[in-house]
Amino acid sequence: MENILSTKQFDKVKILALFEQAKRFEEEGGGDLLKGKVMATLFFEPSTRTRFSFEIAMHRLGGSVVSNADMMTTSSIKKQETLFDTGKVVSQIVDVIVMRHPEAGSVAKLAEGSDVPVLNAGDGSAEHPSQGLLDLYTIWKEKGTLDGITVGMVGDLKYGRVPHSECDLLRHFDVKFVFVAPEALQMPKDIVESLENEGAEVKSGGNLEELIGEMDVISMTRIQEERFESREEYQKYAGSYVLDENLMKMAKEKAIVLHPLPRVDEIDVAVDQDLRAKYFEQVGNGVFVRMALLSSVF
Ligand code: NCD
Image 1 (cartoon, rainbow, N blue to C red):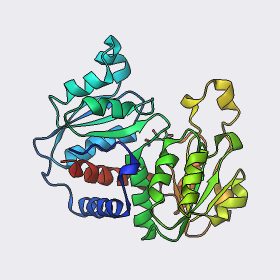
Image 2: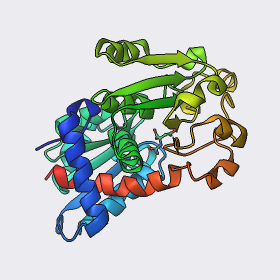
Image 3: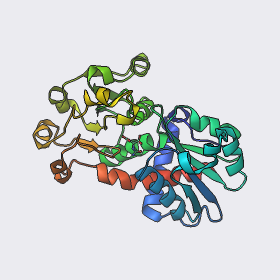
């Protein structure tokens, strides 16, 4: 039985094999591969794309779904059941569990109790493996490769679990990193150091205008309001970066723009019309990558 809790579980061979499988699902559909299997989605934090696309992925593989989008207030966690016990209980009646929670490490706690595979759909600021994978899949499809490219990450690189997972996966490829964030929200030092120790070139700065021209991939992220200690603290950084038509003029002609969404104000809607904007295609790609992930755990 294999859980998917962390991007650390993936190496280059595994990532590319997963993408080949996702591509096959995209071209040929999922058939009835998981017919008779049931997936439970246990979400302790808001979600639109991630929960729906996991659920649609399961449907497209012929499986079925039971779902709780509001575990925090409507599940037995409210009666002080531990995550371990919830995992044990739910795993007696379903075949796979997908879970999101605001606390780092919480999905692993539930997985300890579970007798079926558990997939991490985001745990606090720590990780979001399926999102990282679908972001790379989008780059791989659009660019034809993950090697020899410069990937820019822009926004809240401290609290954003998506940029953390992207780094963890991109480290296996020949990638140059450009991190653009306010000083206080820069990529955590341990991540930067581990990339550098592995020989990657890393550039960090605060000025998007200066650095956008270097990027083949412009991966935007929202300032993660819910992770700040206070609203005042968040307000200091809200609106730090807004990718607009003007900035897009400074970007490479063949650059692509990604965003895990939801966006607040960090990409002007006018950019949606730019052919380099790939964030809505990215959402669609999420279904195929999650089909590949789900089929891989059985
Ligand atoms: C992201 C998340 O939940 O981490 N959204 C998503 O899963 N598509 C990004 C975010 O909330 O900013």
